[in-house]
Amino acid sequence: MLKRLINLCGSILVAAFDWLYDLANRLLGRSPRGACVVLAYHSVASSERDWFARQMDVLRTHTTPVAANIADLPNRHTRYSAVTFDDGLENIVINALPVLAERMIPATLFLVTGALGTNPSWEYFGGDDPSQQRVMTEQQLQTLSTELVTIGSHTMTHPMLPSLNRDSMKRELSGSRGKLEALSGREVKLFSFPYGAFDKSVVQACRDARYERVFTALPVFAFQQPNEFVTGRVGVRPTDWPIEFRLKLAGAYRWLPYAFALKRKTLCLFRLGHAPALVSQGETRGA
Image (tube, rainbow, N blue to C red; front, side, top):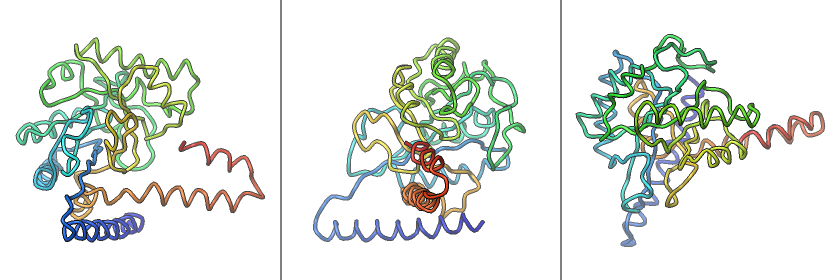
């Protein structure tokens, strides 16, 4: 709870700065700044469906929804958002997609192909235990809307990709893509990193596997460049406080990666004379 409140307070300061900056631009007769935030959900339980629907109403009010596979933003002076879901849980099909369809909001589902029709068995670090959920079946995958739903890959088994050797990583990236394309009859061009974990070698492996865009868990603005390859997302839950969701939608949580980097560098400097190996690991983990 304390960490959540600290993140909220920092984001309120960022939002206040953004408001003052935009006000100054308006007073100077300049066009407002545009931006896009990609939201990353995992689960929408039946008890959370109404909360999720209210969030989507806020999203429609304050931004223009776009698909996560767009090459570039239509207008650089408009606020956009994109909705994504990791893991492909069945409750997304049951509870989230109907809400989105009612509002004509596009979505991207990143699926773990080896878990289709089963309960997830991968390790989790805090939050809800995914083993208590169920991943959508192959039949549900095949009935997803082709108009509003884009299918992306989330590997075959949900591993920590930077820990894999080259051959294992290739199987996770190319194998999942091939199975999704065979099952859905669609071309799969998007990928999201399990646990948000990646480094330079993982990004290059995704390029080699012919993905056109990969998604991180870094809550920064998305689509800053045309045909952007590495795109940030902000994690959200239906149970987020209304002010949390509004700030995330506005991109006000984008300060967090810089805070984490500063903390990591500070720890590295503190340990420099005691554990050089830890410094090396810390510098490369988030590259």
